[in-house]
Length: 114
Image (cartoon, rainbow, N blue to C red; front, side, top):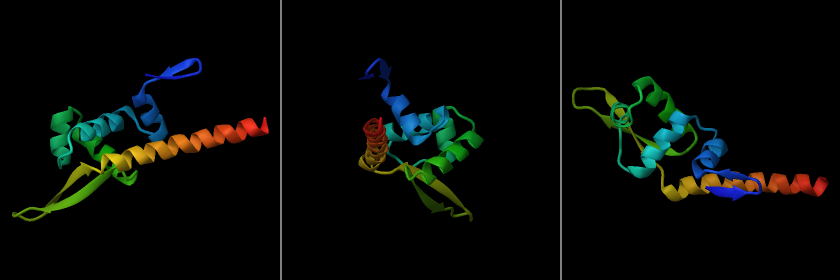
């Protein structure tokens, strides 16, 4: 918990809000933070307990937000499967800190005008 004036925030709430994540997206991000391996969407669905279509939408959004890497694994039988992995944790932390610092700057500007 993080105290701010009269309210306490869980770090998970700050990350979800700052990155604009749904509960499912945060759950998947948290899984990647705890497990730095490469995963297919099928593996993620099984390991996390969410349905495959939710996982597919979620990893797409996390990839678009530059939080995940995506690698194409060509199959011997033809076709391919994408494997996802979290970007460097430092990179993810920097994204979150930039969001918080931008918010802090906006609060300061508003106070200066007040």
